[in-house]
Length: 111
Length: 114
Image (cartoon, rainbow over all chains, first blue to last red; front, side, top):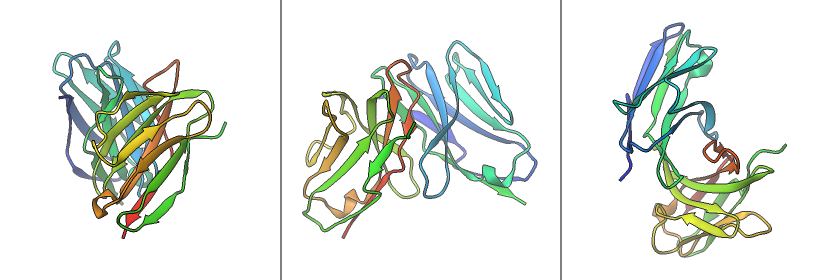
């Protein structure tokens, strides 16, 4: 069945450094790849998304890249700040119009 | 424009009781998705509904769980005869008809089975 794998499961970076989270997907028909941020006890919030006709998308300190041939996509956060600490989920749409989520990455920003 | 609403936010049930979780999508959204999240784990898809239709329920347990999205009123996720393993956060998300995949999440219902 459809699967999205996410790495690493935990990530700790120094404030001001960059953080990179990587995901792979199995369904070659996937065309939509959102990223969600979930703070402790809160709802997941969409932070950026990318569609298959684009290879890269940037929004201020956040960027996402997509390699459809290799079936992987990545989230890049530059100049990390304490408020970036959260769990981040990648996801990919499947042929049945549902979203399959990765297992999450717990990002900690060290002061 | 109010966001996705869920209630109750917290629900405590004894084993064997029924749990009813409600979700009101954002205004103008006709697609509703339910997810379950266990502590320290990811979001597991349960069911995808449009008004009066279940589109995909491949993530729903075959027994005790059901979902509906009537023509009027909120979407309901119903869990009959709850067991301790049902304790989790249940999130619903909605998306607009014109952009099927941009999902916006509600605050979740935290179900505790005692």
